[in-house]
Image 1 (cartoon, rainbow, N blue to C red):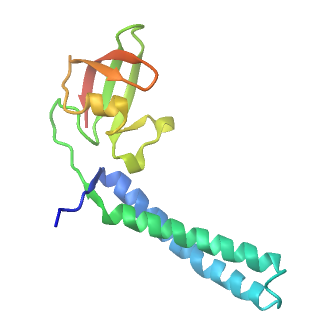
Image 2 (image 1 turned 90 degrees about the vertical axis):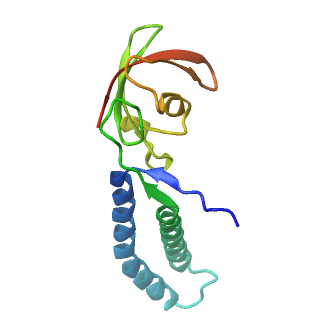
Length: 156
């Protein structure tokens, strides 16, 4: 039998998922109470409150199941204190073509959020940067184009 695959995640990302699970669990009793109250109104076939309450509870339960599976198959990775790009580290890059600079944090795919400059280690940019060091020029093969970046700094 093969070993299970674990998704790499930062400690912060893991704790954010735990926090969301606790928040959803806190909402569950109120949704259950709404569903019970709607069911008590009678005929469920034409009871919109019942239908919506049931849908809301089902969505909450589905999200809880998904998040619990995320934690079950995640492995927290602690970055080392060196100049190598790895999960959890912040990297400053310079685009070779126009010399624009950007700061990104390399994270697990569960916690990627481009709005906060958190890129997944499996994204084209993240996977190209992984295990590279300061001064390296890296070629990124994105779906629409190929471009190069230079790694300026790597920090915890």
